[in-house]
Image 1: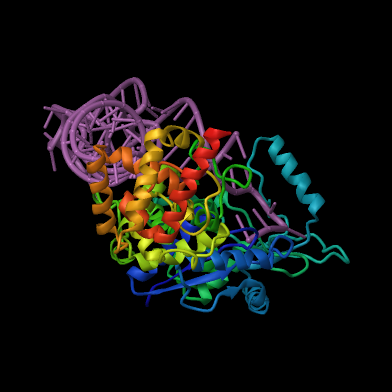
Image 2: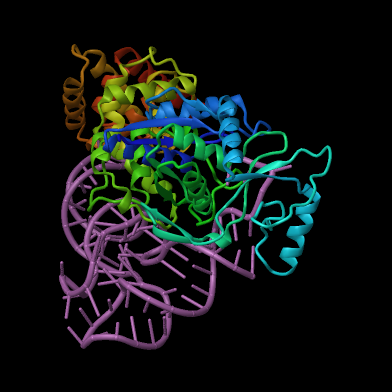
Length: 474
RNA sequence: GCUCCUAUCGUCUAGAGGCCUAGGACGGGGCCCUCUCAAGGCCUAAACCCGGGUUCGAAUCCCGGUAGGAGCGCCA
């Protein structure tokens, strides 16, 4: 039997970081076993599910490169199948009708809670040999409950957490179909996993308590049990649970912050998992090395600093052409036309080691694609002094006469100028930087000027001198 | 309240009874390099939740605390 894993989000919001990690783990397990990965949309809650959320999940998954091997499955399209299984269970006696009203159940739970007991269904409509059931009330459609075993225990041999035992007496008869006939979550999951031949159920560990119920239903159905792995959740930097109100970000927001998808994946795979001292993994390495049994069962905090570090490592080593795709996206996003300046790949080569994110890279490269909006006050004050202006004016002439406009030639020209003037390279490079970049930070001056091009460089040198003089005069 | 899960540097982790004087990485501190910012190199501070056992020996096994977390719906 070949492995099939799935990622089964409910479309009530964007793909958040914890979901992305769960999806990644699930994906890696399938790939490692040469199996298939499936995306299933759990949209039985029609109140909360939205098409926007479905789209957002697809968008996130696509950006991360976690492709489903099958067409996505929607639970709302499988109601006929669920009904069929429920009918069968009713016929088999593994499920039964329950006519208890909501009010009745609420009262029951209130009493149990008052007695400091765990609230659970007391089995009042559960058929039992020799037991007389109440007469069904007229006009009140029943729900369907699963007839959970009352004895013995369920042992869940979790791939991450190890064996976990649940006594059946702790479990009650859960509702598998509502009064209106719509099946419930725990039941749909079971039927889906069964029908789709899921061999590995990898999900958040908020589902461990659902698992024994699901196992019992699977057993009642005569299905083969999948293996389970419950992944701990991701906490915020402060150790608190991530929520909409508290720092939970969608995967696409990490794109906006300037992450490479591969880098985010790499950071995520290392959160709770390790392989010796290795920090960086290619997608292929993740697929061959990832091992659920080595995943930590305790929750981990999301550390933005380390995530940026991983991202930086990718920016430094990845194929510039790959980076260019994201870089282009960021430049356009800040209203810059990437065609109005040097080739993206050349800029990436010059900027990659000094940028932790693509957003930072785009910001630091803005000057190459658009006119300067002004000078940094401090930098201008410091470098546009008499000596600086002398340098700018002198360099203007030197560079204007330069026949080859490329980094080596510029390097040579600037060095010679500095030497001739008896100035350190810093005294020469900094005023130029402020003049052409607008601030005192940029790649090496020769590269900066080469990227900027002759016309823009000369124009900015000229403009800086004029600006500084008019300022001094005014 | 009940059931279940978790607990090593600030953070992610290594650690499967002696290899632990607890290792690596991020972040921090310092030095070197240097035209800026970076990058890089070297050095450095920093942890086994507490208490009992078991054992010649425990971060590792057991028990009990404590502290976090999850679940207990005609939500998913």
